[in-house]
Image 1 (cartoon, rainbow, N blue to C red):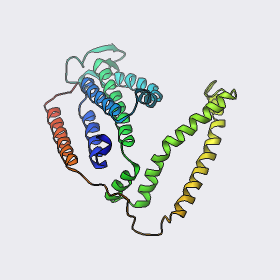
Image 2 (cartoon, rainbow, N blue to C red; image 1 turned 180 degrees about the horizontal axis):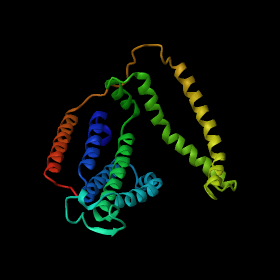
Image 3 (tube, rainbow, N blue to C red; image 1 turned 60 degrees about the horizontal axis):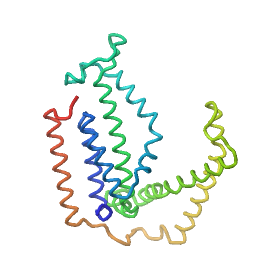
Image 4 (cartoon, rainbow, N blue to C red; image 1 turned 180 degrees about the vertical axis):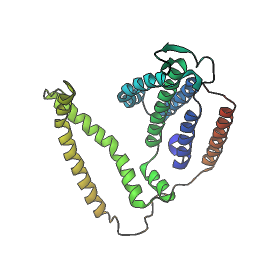
Length: 257
């Protein structure tokens, strides 16, 4: 059912889930939103291994965020007694607070939620629908085409990169090992083939666009027009009620630290 929804319905749902994760500061509430996004990902056909693969490069960033927020907020910044607890006091202005640690976890969960929901939105929506949606948002067709084409080639470039990495490792190249500048140097055998592949793909795309008469007509008409169905209107109404309820609960102090 998720794949059959209109792109505007899925975009509104994505924005609502993202905004809700930013409205509430409690890690328990944000954990619920993250869990909900994981369920949506599994329902749309995205595997757990794929989710972990997308989040694994961000592990260092996650650790840095938790440590930074733990020392960045004083006890007076928080409203609840639990969050105001101080683990370590280095000086009069630098504290390691439980609230800062919990807020760092909330930021981490927000990033995870955005990464997963973005993957669900892109995976479950044809790029032609995105192109029509951007056009209906008064974006110029040329700009919308460039944006959707860039998104379309991300999985292809990822597959090409993995293939080149495997080929270079099979030849004995130590990718990403050694000191800092040595690590940069080891990626040269990967970057150069990727640049060649990118140029070749862009040339093939340009030839294909010319052969199909791209730019010959001022008005571009889609093969299939996107339309909102009854289920889409119902879900959009539910999303608006949910975001209104979330704003109301946040003003009452629910989900705060």
